[in-house]
Length: 388
Image 1 (cartoon, rainbow, N blue to C red):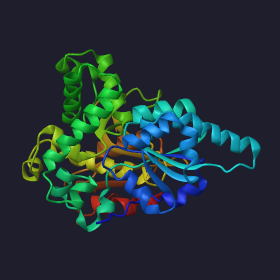
Image 2: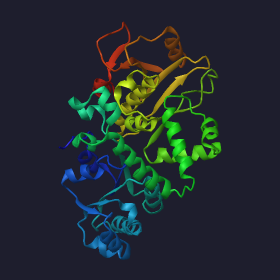
Image 3: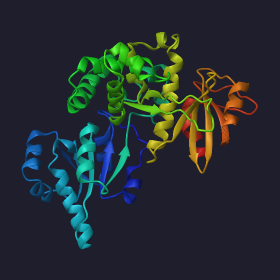
Image 4: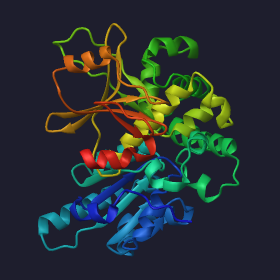
């Protein structure tokens, strides 16, 4: 079963640099999506024999391939990167050589950044693909199912799979092997403790020293490890909006997981009903909504500029979306519809920004307010498309 992805690679390929890097975690469908284009030959570098040939003689190896090629798990063969650089530069200088048209994929972003940064700076375009959005799932989406399975394609293609085991295996292979090992982290147990603590604190103000105390490491180490999770598209930071002119605003950021199902698994949930009745549900739903907004922008090839706003008096706006041209969308996230309070309206007015609309995003629609739009999460993508 093929699930249509919203990332339109065929369109953006025409405006990209000759080397294109498709980033994203394991098992999100990077290779399947590129192969679906049908325009590039696919080479699997996780095959030991193929990888050895590429490492021993990268020039000869690439000579045997078509100019349009997908190098899957490219960081496993780092000798290819200087050779790709040489070919791009040679074609640019001569003006008559055939310019490579190459897609690079790789789940280990630590290795990918190192190799691309050293050899292909200024020659590569980046595109991001994460797990499935609610919009992509369409009629397959339901709140309870998405809390557990979230956007992992294989869990929808093979619904018989044990969700908890699948996600635990993913943590073992992608996070413990790809991320921890590649970064040379020796304190694996402490790193995993930080990962679980971060999952338990989604939607809360991030204080590295608090996590450090529980994990038994220093705050600088926590910051470093969380940055590693961000680099590898496991978690993302939602910064606080503030200006030097407004001293009443909180500056500490929040962190969320790109895939809410991974956060749910790390919190220890195995069924949707207990989640829906737990204090964590509000934060997990918040993660779900903000993750959908992030995917909306990333799948269109742009980087979202998002904030939350919180005053020293703890009045908060869940999400502030920069739409460009000094226009902003303000969003409150509620599991059930609830209008903005006067304090929230006053807070957003005090920012001095051009707020083009105010929304309440909720699990289901069915209620409206006088000057605040109620948006169901299943319709969030289409509403964003209308306003951007």
